[in-house]
Image (tube, rainbow, N blue to C red; front, side):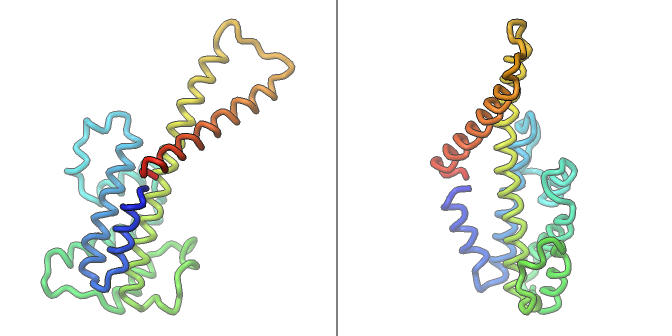
Amino acid sequence: MSDERQRRFLETVNSADPLIQAVKGVGFLDELTSELLAEVLPSPHVVELGRLSFLLKVDLLVALHLVPIDLRPLAERVNRIRNVFAHSTSASFGTGDALGLYNLVPDRVRGALDGASKNEPQYMLRRGIGLLFSALCGAIENARDNKVRTTELHAIVEEVCMPEAEYTDDMRSRERQRTERIEKRVREERAKRQAEGRL
């Protein structure tokens, strides 16, 4: 992910205004869901990702096992909060809302939250959106790394399946070299994305 995107996201979720946190924060999440789907779909241009709702994209990502299913309720609640703020001039986000959001954070990551702040509305809204943002960024990186691995594995399979390729006693050494080649390529591609500001 680019430094600029991360800076803008942090500026958004650290806003003192829950309207900005909710509406713009979910906007960032929506962009990330589209980006992840574009990475993993064989022909993403066939689907107009911009026409799909945020929750439908989350459901697709959960179905593809790219986003853990236990994050789906949190995504749904954050989206509902966003909709309330987007469509009501009298919207608010209070202590009860914060506790409700806290209760939807999966147990496996709840320990990273400040339990004393679970009733603090802006903290919980920031953390809920931040948790989803981190999960989506990680999933995008994993998808990109897997693309590189798949390409390299395909090349290895073609190499091994050639009639002149025969396995010898040094098979383990060759397999280790191939694995190292794949991981080297993954590191190179990751460094390239980072240099281009796409990490």
